[in-house]
Length: 111
Image (cartoon, rainbow, N blue to C red; front, top):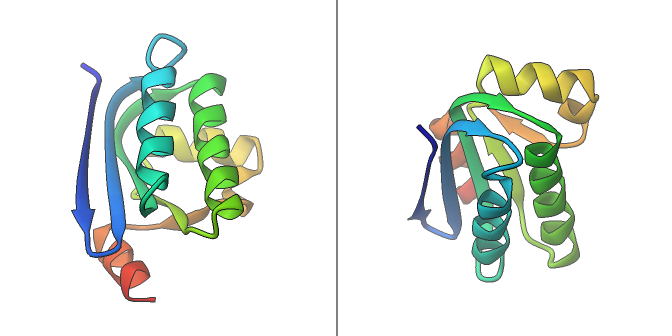
């Protein structure tokens, strides 16, 4: 089952995703990320994502570009093995800031 929630951690908004981020759901993910970026730097928590397709990756890339344009931070937190495999295949693991867990997210907030 797909789920999306947000929670504020100081100056960073954490967007938690779970389930399968595919074409049927990626527009909602994109909208949530872009809305959060209007006011905050953003971390996207991906530990419970079992599958992500190119539309989901595109939503993350658009979030990264929007954050850069707005001089905000954008990080991926606790990427699941399925997501990490796709990021590595596309060599996007070198483009995104990947944090291993929420501890890293809290440290990013301080930094």
